[in-house]
Length: 188
Picture 1: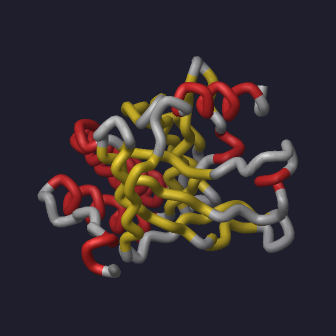
Picture 2: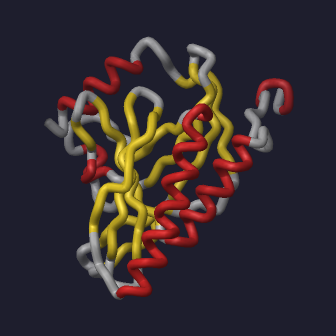
């Protein structure tokens, strides 16, 4: 199944490609569980505003994972997701829900894992999950889902600081403060 989903997503996206990509400096950082360190560790994270060949603008968030799992199937599996501008209100509502759940879990000393909701994404949907590392450290895990299957093992994790950074990035995008660069006109 792990092989089928990326292949199906690739075939769905085959008709559409990234025609323009602008890397953004957001300070956003994702985390991934590291079994050697026995905890969630920061990973290199890249945020881009992309214009797809069909004219749709998306916000892409990509994380470099530990190890060589990216290449185990003979192709590059990107641990990323692409957000839609039309779904920003849904994303923001889930981020606010994360804050409420985090406050409650810290106050009560709870450690839980529970799906918070789903929202549209480019060629699929995003699943948002609240996950406790312990009673004081709570993460938002975001997985891409397509054709009824979610790639939970490729989820991008956000701690509380980076949930705030994601919220700020989404609000800036919604306000039109993020824009693509015409690189050809600037660097000719």
